[in-house]
Image (tube, rainbow over the protein chains, first blue to last red):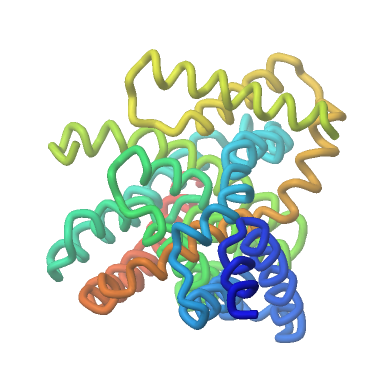
Length: 237
Length: 110
């Protein structure tokens, strides 16, 4: 019996199935909690799977033999982000200066503050690099971290936490600043909190969701192209 | 559906090739995304096969993040050691990013 359990725990298909099940359960929890910004499905599913791995004493490499089948789809998913971006072409043509400027300044601020504050507080270099990409949409952040020598799993946890934090903080902070424009709110959610922010913005209407999606695409693209070149110039690479 | 997936993978592959030739540390998929965007702009219309596939594909984008996020299990010591730096950097940079994005967008769009 123990042998059977050990055999099953080391099959890739077990962890593929476990990942899908954990996602399914996490979606249910998220819905039951009234789509709460704090109980994001990725956070809940990750927590479930991490607990399961610790309980069964299975290491991450074994888990990833199954998880890799899902992970590899991040590449085509990144490419697919061009489609919603194209749907915003008319808007992009009309307000290109403000949109590019907003995405660039917001992304630079997030990167600069995250890297310096982590470094000042004594984080290791790998953590500082993982911090740099955390505001960007997950598929781009993971691809970038692999290229830049950060810690991929740390990055994905940070991206997730940033999304949750940005999704929860954006609207209260904008209200404090007396900014009530839905376009600005949606765009800020997309720059700061990528896909999680976009999902949040869609709850505020199609228009807000569209701006968030556009912002996520622009910020991700600009960060992916400028950050490696910037880090290289700054002597990190 | 298969046609949509083939197109996405082909654009990613083209992106990977360009990144390799240029020797720049940019993810191939990001260049693939830019190439697909320009393909759609030049084409001047939506690509029905691609639209149908990407819509259902991106609906479950969150699922694709999970295997990487679970990797945190291998870094619990690092988190235990650096949690303060990580938490402060996360909260401060997120707040500053929210303010600077909103203000710059407001100023730039008159």
